[in-house]
Image (cartoon, rainbow, N blue to C red; front, side, top):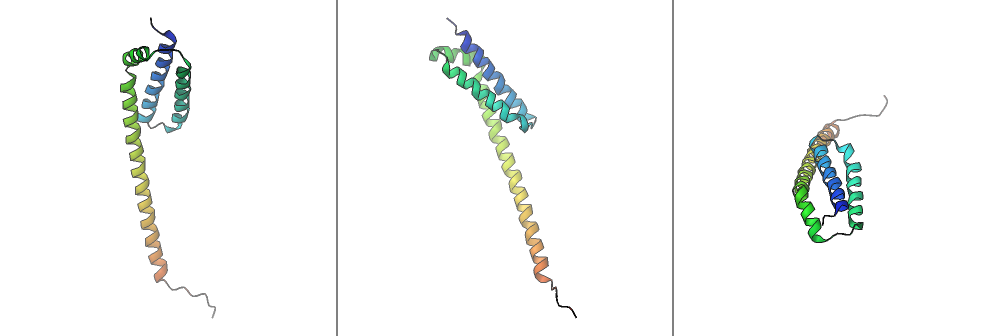
Length: 115
């Protein structure tokens, strides 16, 4: 016997996962939070359902949920690392600029005395 409600909810979950992957690939970061919230809501709905482990496994395998989840996780890690690298570059450039400016101002002599 197939659990129709479980399958329906897992299809929604899978669809949300694919939308997250697509948003990350397109660098549409503004849309991520709403998609993650929607997906969490689907997880909450699934947890309220009555199903067996076997039913869940069968439907998850049929929809390739684990493959999509792995792809999403890998993509999120890769994007996180890219953002970290970009922030480090910005920080290094800022430090270099500050050091350059300090050197200029420390060597200059400015007099505030009126003659």
